[in-house]
Length: 192
Length: 192
Image 1 (tube, rainbow over the protein chains, first blue to last red):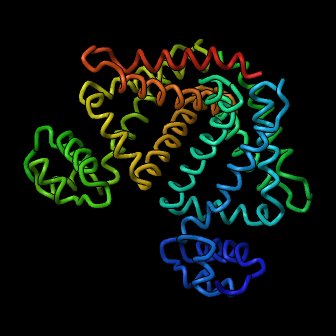
Image 2: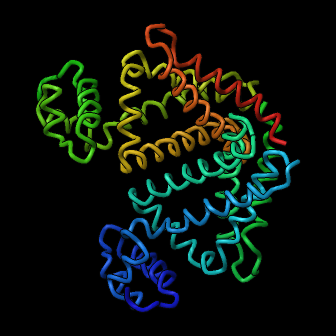
């Protein structure tokens, strides 16, 4: 093990997104990302198995926070309230730096089929984590599966609004995600 | 162009799924798939760009049928009825051969992270196709996005039930998918 690198993980993510934007995902190497971040290649591999995983590195954290928030919601909460508790907890994982990075990250994902696929799998993974946590609380199938889809859609929509909004405002992701969930809940009444 | 190969596409898919099951996705080459199917490599490439696309080759067909079914639903149908019309049309794309192949296909996808990712992107693509078709009918956002998630979940759940069921029964996918959609609609009342 080399010495601890303060902020190396964040610098690697920013360097990767910048390089993907400048020269494309396929043309970018791990060596270039490490150099731009001012770390060695072996430091890169202490944090990430490869360049693709770097962009979804937050997935385990999000899944863990979703699961914790869902597990700790009040016993008498309905399925969507429970999902809201999970989303609120998970939203704490993304701060101002994530917001700053979001437009470039979005462009990089949109430009690479490999990253689009990995991003799609991330959504599926988050839905599965929520469903498992809801089932563990006793929410029956298919209510748990459906509530999880509301949750993933709310998280995506809230994140999109937040990352496109005024980044000086200092408002937090959770508010956007919970507003999106409320909007979806209201829309569900008009499904017919 | 070589001569027309009757059933070559279907034989290639079956050969690929068998080889993926026998020896793994990574170890299987296009040359092996073509040989097993009794066609040349250039015939393979007339149908598919690579071995990964082979397993999601039905995606464009499904998207087209979903879009057509949604466009042609009665004017006074509610969003979920419209989605049901799309799902019913799309279900016609998968017949007894697909059902026969489904358990091996599922095993092959489960065993390969690359195929899981491609499969996840397929779900995202089908949801996007449904959302676009619903918006084209005048269904407002986010109702359209939500109805599409109901549709994708119903299609996945119905397909799973159908492919695990008694394959001699001759019953069609559409019935399973529409029953799954009804079940989700009923479950949505208990979301809280």
